[in-house]
Amino acid sequence: MGFEGDEESAANQVSTKSRFRYNSPLVQVTLIGLVCFCCPGMFNALSGMGGGGQVNPTAANNANTALYTTFAIFGVLGGGIYNILGPRLTLAAGCSTYVLYAGSFLYYNHKQHQSFAIVAGAILGIGAGFLWAGEGAIMTSYPPPHRKGTYISLFWSIFNMGGVIGGLIPFILNYNRSEAASVNDGTYIGFMCFMTAGTLLSLAILPPSKVVRDDGTRCTNIKYSKMSTEAVEIVKLFFNWKMLLIAPAAWASNFFYSYQFNNVNGALFNLRTRGLNNVFYWGAQMVGSVGIGYILDFSFQSRRKRGFVGIGIVAALGTAIWAGGLAKQVGYKHNDLPPKLDFKDSGSDFAGPFVLYFSYGLLDAMFQSMVYWVIGALADDSEILSRYVGFYKGVQSAGAAVAWQVDAHKVPLLSQLIVNWSLTTVSYPLLAILVMLAVKDDQKGEEPSINPASMDNNSKPV
Image 1: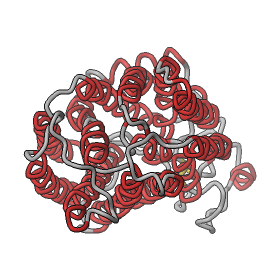
Image 2: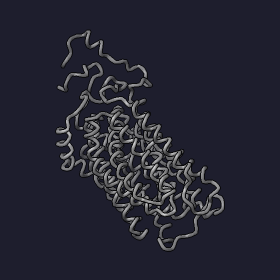
Image 3: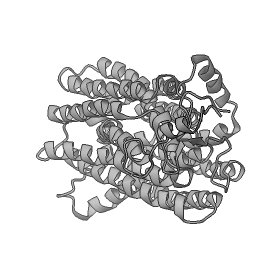
Image 4: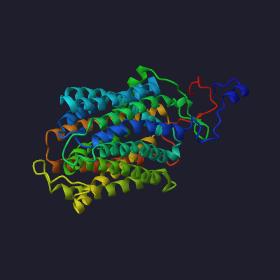
């Protein structure tokens, strides 16, 4: 098996006594959560204000279209790039593009030229492909197989705390500007500071070959991959029946953002209230991820049964929330918007739309955590899962690119809602079929990945 003797084996043995050791899955998933807190968490807060914090959402819509177009390509390629470069270079390169994107809107605040924002959006799409492929591989492969839901909810809670803090920034800095206006420069500068910190923090992430679970297994014993290998494996994803069943859920999972951010939060509330709403929208995501994570890990002994129950709960809740959105949506259109609501001045009129927007955040976290759990249940190895997550993020981003242009072309709001509702509904039975056919009750995915911590890192898998 590649061992020279008991002495070499003992020398390579790694202590697993402390759950809080630097090379533990808990610490590493926490670190990637903090990285995403600073970068995509702040990006979410920026996008969640509607129009990137601008009165006119045109620049943000076009920038997001460019972003998700390149993200669709590099999301798929990101898993292979992660396997070649490793987590540190991949994550640091991805995080740095978030700083540029926030800076482009600071520039737009003064010059009102959208070209920089569009180019920065395209560059961010490349960087986001790197970041999310690396994040997905870490979040789904580092934890032990029977606790992936718990670790996903841990990551999702830390990550979305970024949206909560990011929502407080525009709320506080624009508190006295209740009339319609673009956010001030300090808002964008605050976002840029957090994103810079996340870029530096990404350098603390360990490669999977150095991460040791509490039971002594490593996430992978392969230290690097080759470009030719990754190219072949990426092409195979498009013919993998598991990925084809996940594709509708991936397409749906970011498609609704343009509708919720621009046409619910942006259309119904004034500037300072939009910032406050985002605090609760992303806070709801923390609650939703913890709730669904518990169900997916602890509700039943059978992992397959937990998957069915989780999908059923998300489907029922999603149906109720989108039905509530339909009831609200029939009351306004693009050219017939109601007066902007304010959390202080609008009284009881504020409550219903606020609860609806909060519920959208709750559903988003539960839906995406559920999909990540299903992906994580398909394998345990970092290389395999980085490709699976890359495919998921690529398809997700292609859907988002279409969605932002749907909104930019002023497609009727009722039609947008119906499409969003239909896309999520179609994905539930397909995910249930995937769980039935591919998720094993013995808590092992189809591809084996047991790698003892005592194994020589230079030895090849047998």
